Image (cartoon, rainbow, N blue to C red; front, side):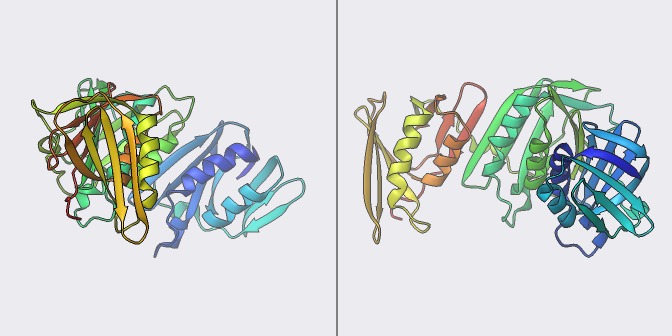
Length: 372
């Protein structure tokens, strides 16, 4: 194999592929990215046997001799990142891999690329096509609410429900729940079944990063035990989380007597940051009191101090005080623009708060005990 390649496009693609390779593994071969040079460009593949990626690189690639090579992740990443050469030549010989620039030369040992596990391609006739922007929002607005550390494995991923035009993602850690819904298009009568299409947190974050600016849509195919995603340049495979997802619809409040308050992200987030100055890891609760056209945020931590911040709101109902973990509300604010308007729905101090935007996003926060 011998290729001439522009360093920067290759470095960006290699870094994405390298994110799949394990830092440590009893199978040392997995700590490599396989590069295959063929007509028109190169394909990078990497896997940890749970998640796999195939990444096409055509920009700035000239193939002089077809073939394949295994590139050690850490060293190759460092070379591509630190080199100042705009153009590189990568070639293989009997002793390994040579990476040569106009002012630098590196030689790395090379394992047999034929021994590298195959990473599946996207060959599905049944799949959903989801607009790029919607897919990114579905991931960004739900993945933070998952619980990768939980002993309940099903909470360590994002549930995808795909049926007809309706596409939906849910993330929860048992204390808050995020749901994002939108419209896609089904091909080949594709749909998910039950509550088992749970994509691991790390895998769906990788999928979101793999969506390029040039992509108009992504294609998603759910199978019995895994899920495939295809963009214009990448195919990502992931095994699904084992287990059944909790019935999230039971968590989502359906209330007739609740009060709905129109709010904007920016002012609330500013007040929240001020009130949380006197909180710490042990004392995360902030009292939110809705009364007389005002939202009052109060925090009290014995060794740090007290805070009280007020902001005007359109509310004239009975006073209600909710105690919530300020981090959960901050996470909601961080995935939205400051100008975004939303509805803050409250009912009582002991029932969940529900926050909803008009583009299909809903977020539930369970209240904390008042006698914390």
